[in-house]
Image (cartoon, rainbow, N blue to C red):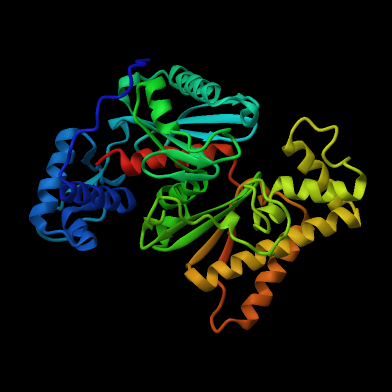
Length: 407
């Protein structure tokens, strides 16, 4: 793999870029789709759509769709007149690699342009105790491993998307704060690009779940929705009018560090009273340790193991541990209800490791949402629980490449 770093990004017409992105989004979302439908859904002129799709066909990023049914009849075509030409994404136009950095592991997934997973690699490592240079090297090794396992040519990889917990500036890819890095800001994108010789896109990990839902999941059916992730930390990805919202500085939608209690529990970000300080894995383990003299955190290889043991105790009748989960669920429910009041999303998706949690957690969460619903002049949006594993985070990172790397 070339370690000289990617070539400089070429200058491009921003209007043309925006048009390409809108066309690609519609083809991806609705394909196979005719040019006239692309015009209707994008608001672009027919001439612009014709020009952009011609370029995309020449570049091999889209293709003419095979729309014939089993009986040889054309699917979705008008009964009279000239058959329409339908377009769709070319799956084999290239590949994207998605990477998810966690406290104790790095997962990488390689997909084609349709999001089909071609290969995966999982590297166990104490990421939160490693120096930045070691994290970069380990991430690069994981990327090389998934390319080798998948049997694709490095030159066919369009880019690498990386999800990092914490405050991540986009598109610069500088990590302003994360539990994984010992310095801030850390120019992680630049360091990784220099190591792997591929274009990299680095973003907050919760944004990647939102992109995965937008490209491949329930988000295809809603123009506005939000994703709340709960595991080692608490995150949020927000899609408004079919666009991922990052804020004016690329640092927005940090739900986990909004404040619930003035001067409350200490958060790992250094502030007090953050919702993460009551709802995340480390917060639950810390609170449970008060009742058992530290046993909740002792004797376990990882935070995941400690949480699994606590969930078993809570569901098995340990009233003290169940109370910890109950309070965490209530706080999360209150936080989500606040988000609904501000954002009015069509649907709220709960994702992350804590989609597997104690019964008391979910009971309190639903109770808090129910109490909020009674006081609201409109119904609460549906709460959908999607128990994705680490693979979907990496798939979302690949979606970031597909979302940004084709324009």
